[in-house]
Length: 241
Picture 1: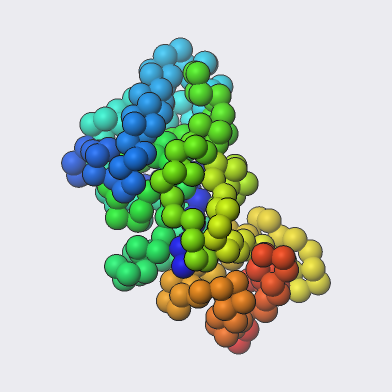
Picture 2: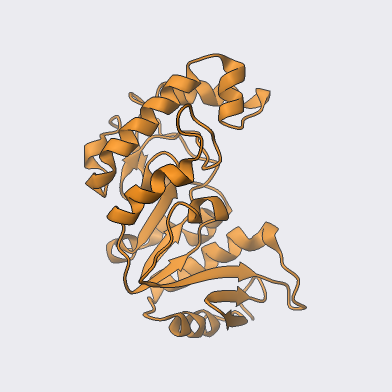
């Protein structure tokens, strides 16, 4: 079983740590495309502010993110599990997972393509919807590289958002996505990140081999679930008392 996570928009910048070494990141086949996107991000972030903000889809109040990006080559790094924050990662508590569980996790990234929790990276600002010079569609850019690099077998629990899912989709593996609904069937997209974090935590504690087993394991943890055409529908947000 492999769990695919989205990155978080919010990131915790480490105070100390060695600079990023692209050759040390997981999936060495992605080193060259990582180098290209990193260079493009640094370059655009150091150019005309208005152009950079538009390219990265940032507001004027987020101009400080440009300085962050400009210093990425020398910035301190920490394990990706400590860099990414936000609701999903708070609920997942990836830092508490054992080494075997962490090996079953991949985190999507517009900058790195994908990383493992223990890969050392700096905090950065780049979303999959950004439009870098000569690389206006990051999902399309990453697709052929990820297709060659990522394993496509067994069960994949895909918790990525749409933009990141567009960068790579398994063809041979069984894929399960997770959706969140109120008990009366209304979609609650604003809470889906929390739900996905909860589901990921349950599955890292007890891995599954099939979509049916995913539904059984999450239900046994106290959630009301339904399995519908490859999607696990979670019908409430907290385990039943």
